[in-house]
Length: 439
Image (cartoon, rainbow, N blue to C red; front, side):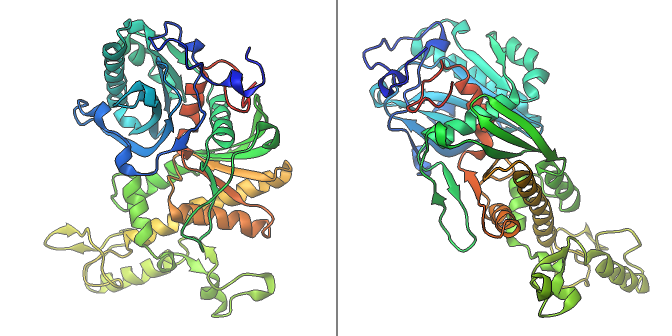
């Protein structure tokens, strides 16, 4: 086991740079690590021969300028909606310039594209390091690590280590909190820029609550590097938003749905306190007129009015959501109001309303769990967030509102990769970070 001083935590620059047959012996040198902000600095050359597979290369690579040794493993976190892949690559000009952690994601129905890309990374690793095929190891976590275990092993012909999902999440977030500058931040609707939180030693970060929002939501109480428990959650998560909006709006991807939500106005769909109490709201109990009293609360009344109007002219029937154009079928655009053959409700407004409903629900449950378990810090992770301003606005507002300003919501720039990074780090020896991040 490495000693507790900083020198033992970093790579020996005099060590051989050849491929290492036993990847577990590698120490990742995180000294000087930083997040690459510029999109054009995230190289795509690694993947030019990937035949247009359905991935998205997130541009927030983590540069490791002082790590020069070969890393002989990749990590993948396969969830219900997305598969997240993390791998290390050297800078294209020279190994002496170190390398970077790369972050890619695939929709889970394109998992075989992900496996195919891992195979291409394996071939590249063999060419660059003149190593044996078996020297590349795959660290896998999430439900798909079991579901697709045989497919990964058959395609790559290498060792596939399946790691516990919750443990990987905690290892990943601990690493980001303690080791990566400008990773953790708070968000305010009043400020266009995030407020970054400095890295802290592990001795100062516990206990905390991790709210991991993927297809569903898990809430995890973390008391130490290897001491955590799932204390709650909800089935109403990213999968709920994705599923309902795919039915209602016709949007095909989660990013399309978030784009719709950005353009929407939930007041056209939600019933607000002002709709019930008038312009002044219900100030006696602290409810402003803009506060949502009922998500989708206006829909039934407006829909019934539209149906009665349509029945008078032989159009919309009871139970139909869409108005139709007799020449072109259901319309794909939106119009003002409820008439003239357009949609009864704009997809943008519906998207904004549902995003608020899901996010506020998660925020309130997270606050209640933090109170029940006496947890001051609340971190939100998972691919549901995606750095989306409206989502973070809602979660931040919920925590601030219910705590009377005593608590904050904390976010991470790599929020969707906690499990994948945790699995990647599981291949490391103990106490390799600058501050002995892990036992």
